[in-house]
Length: 356
Length: 194
Image (cartoon, rainbow over all chains, first blue to last red; front, top):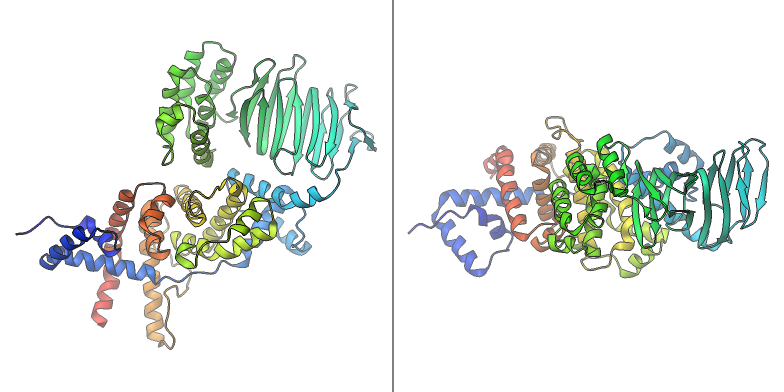
């Protein structure tokens, strides 16, 4: 009697992953079948040569690169590095993706966290860009560039905020755990290297919570605003509604409804228009059709946010579209996503974020 | 790591979560060579690619370690980062450049007192094995390296590769089939020596 060939079972047979019964079946078959015996020898051989590969020591340049990239990306001091090494680092460029750049910023931010925490917060300092003078200002004071001037706010050791002309910003309280500004109108550009959630800008329609990044926020006279990210991440938060915005993306905010749905600035014009229409409740169903049709893999940023914002009847369509680009990770089921299970949504977002 | 000396201590992981830079350094020292080696062989002894992937993995690890809750072994989570980084980078490259000589390293473990001929033969085998691995599709490459270089169990591989144990077995089976073709000349040479 000759049983079916056992090729598919051979790796598990070699690796001791078969049950006793299956192992005996393979034993018996291999003893009688030259083809499978040869296949077994091939597997044993290839496994043995891969097993003999040596562990290679990571060169010191790898760790240096981590530190150096943190310095280059975040402009942060790193005490273990010499000036000479730092200068050399600035001449080097690794083609890392934005996600890694975000990691660099946050890693560097984590690195300075203890030193920041250990020191008393510095008071606000404001420099007039036009007159060059710098003066300390107290919480509650306003920086108003309505006369056409510009200013720079120094945010302790965390970074700077450039205040464009025709802008009104109030300085908030400073504490070891929070630096807070209130943007009434106009435009500010922030470059912050700090642990997440240490620097916050309140606007009429949302709070911009820094997660280690650089960005520009504009608030119009009517209180509507927009956030454009150039580096890292920010979170827009308002009454329990949250939008996560990575570098290269933007998000509008509207009085009374808070943060809108973020999208990448290089998305198609049709998608961007449709997102605005959706957020403003203009023909939401048609807008969703356009968004789903126009979305690229990167636009899963927008689609992921829509999961919790579309009508229940449309949620499955959004799910299916995202899944066409990236299936949910193991354990994250369709039902959990459609039920807006927070852990499942987070885990899927973490997978998708590799594409953002 | 599991296959090479156990897990990092919970105390170091806790310190990393709190942003302790020295703890990150200890974590890096504990795992850097395994991470680097996987990337090194994944990209056919491309030291630049291995270095960049290793950086990417540890930076992501530092960014996200606060989210690691310990439901699975830390090393499994780390392997997952490594595989994702390697596969993601491989997607962005054309088919790996096969035919170029990899870095001239004797990457097959050598015993002492080898003759020049034996050293040369080992170097040739190492080169052939690196090339053969590099020709595998990225997911099969990852499976072969995790199983036979890192010595992960099928269960840990399933976690690291985010797939079922059946898929792990299937990838290994397909990987072996392709490797066997590529390594046939090496195997014949070994046989003729016996």
